[in-house]
Amino acid sequence: MAPRLKCVTVGPPVFDTRIAHTAPKRADPFYLSREWRQLMRHLVEMRGSVCQACGRTNTRLFGDHIIELKDGGAKLDPANIQLLCGSCHTKKTARARAARMAARHTR
Image 1 (tube, rainbow, N blue to C red):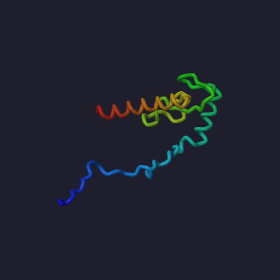
Image 2: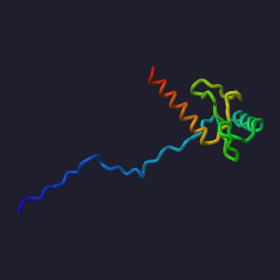
Image 3: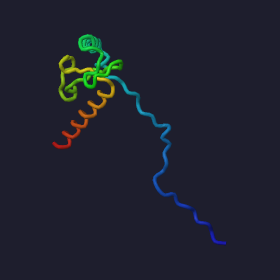
Image 4: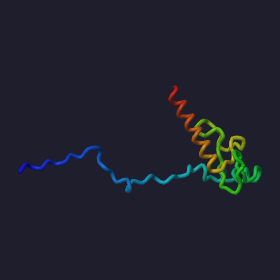
């Protein structure tokens, strides 16, 4: 009787991804400051509890810097802050991040 051949595994090894966890998201301490919270309360009182991009009401609003801080925007200037719902804030932030990355690659 001829000896049996062993099978060779093909491809990369399998990793157990159930044990990998992302680090919890932590808020920038600036957004927890008294000055930021006071400014947000003031803006909601003045502008109303409505998304300034899509007009949604009865939703959580985010204070979004029109010119992002990473791009040199003013931290506490009410003219640089708009109130956005979660979906509008996510879209705007993604567009700004993509534009920043594109600018980095064209230099």
